Image 1 (cartoon, each protein chain N blue to C red):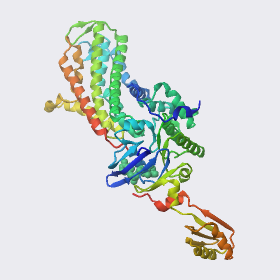
Image 2 (image 1 turned 180 degrees about the vertical axis):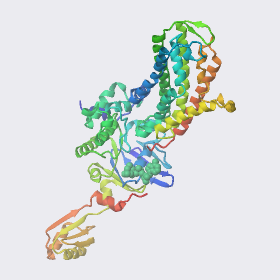
Image 3 (image 1 turned 180 degrees about the horizontal axis):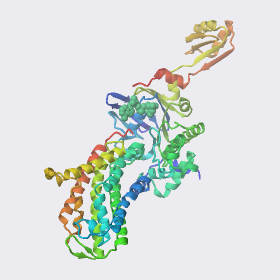
Image 4 (image 1 turned 90 degrees about the vertical axis):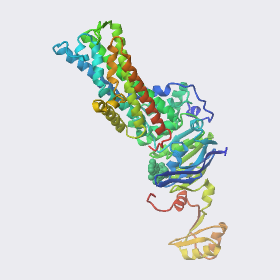
Length: 310
Length: 286
Ligand SMILES: Nc1ncnc2c1ncn2[C@@H]1O[C@H](COP(=O)(O)OP(=O)(O)OP(=O)(O)O)[C@@H](O)[C@H]1O
Ligand SMILES: [Mg+2]
């Protein structure tokens, strides 16, 4: 338990008739960068709200940084930086004044270092030059950056970031990726919910996939991806013959398309494939071993459907 | 300076001494907001209008016991007249606006969730919010009094004040009596503010909460004017407000003032507890 930054067991939230989160056992090891994935409405934000004590679980319990919640809220949350469902600040205050406000309600913050810490946080998200603008005048991406700055006002052991790159430009997205990397390097655990799978793929060590309120799978990213095996792609002008050879070798799910044959490699030694094709006189103009992208994996787990589950 | 120096070094974060930072921040939010400053301006208009109207009209002495007719004898009566006029709507509306905003306003723009995850304990949040409402209520009432007193003394002079019972007191005692009346009303309005704090925990629409406070205020005055409901009157939140004039008796008639203060304290306690019961385990989904 001690080496888990987040551990939930049977965490459930029911809104009226609907079960938004259904018996989720989220396990985030300390030091991990955990990508919390799932389609719209799958229960990510609801789970995060329960973790932070904003809403009360219908059933189940959870620990943060090894301590039972909500009993230890007062000791644990000061070490947790969080971003929940987008930024929220007072529109008629400047960015800096908003951060001062957040700092002044924090009983663990030292007022003597407020200015230094706020400047540091603003600098880190690239907002120092715009610090005295009214929040109302901020763009979507600037607001998002300011919310991230708010999580950096104090040293944190855990960051819970709900869609941190929402609305950011490519530079901003890269910066956030770097930021998450550097936070992780400093030993912080990061739980980041996102739909941007390529994002997650680049920074995460672990992933968990939510679907209609349930956690379908979770674990180290390599382990989760290992579930879907690599495929061999053969580019040839005789795809039917190539497909026959692949089947003969023991590849599964073999399909022939115009100019292309694809099959799941399974236990077959990959280096033998091209040799076998050439020996059978199948001309090979291209060969590749492909791991399915996280996106393919995501879609295979959560389905192709575009409609949000109600 | 590198930002990395200041923010990341996971460590225990010691709890600091109890400080007034949260309350000060709350007051800065209230008094720094343009809308509220404009509201304070409107509150100040009433005593100014009263003073000017009395000054330019032909004096008709000896008409009724109300404060308006006494203004020409002592400018401090401008403050008392302004208080008695503004206690019907303007001051309750001002306090209702701040109280309605207190929790619902933060929920509406989403800052409530970020306060709670700092973390701010929900009980502490409600305590600080009520303290800020009370301070605002006192400041707004003092403001009306102060503007009235300054404008009144400037136009009509100060000096001896004739009390309702006919006794004369010096200027110093008169100012003291005015201060007592002001403080009394400030606390009365704060009790309405506590009702507003409770309503503010029920909704995410601050305007709705403010309107509800004003409706309760007006309803209380209406019920208070129906003789058939006399058994109810002494329990109404606004019933003892007009007793502030008792500070002008000689000696001060403490009976109703004490009842008024106890009623205000009772409303504050009951509605703060109701707010706590409602809010302490409420789902914050906004
Ligand atoms: N306060 C609420 N009352 C009723 N239902 C709610 C409430 N909050 C969330 N839900 C429902 O719970 C489900 C999960 O919502 P949630 O916000 O957790 O999804 P999400 O995974 O964060 O989605 P997104 O990727 O769009 O942010 C949705 O079906 C939503 O309608
Ligand atoms: Mg969400």
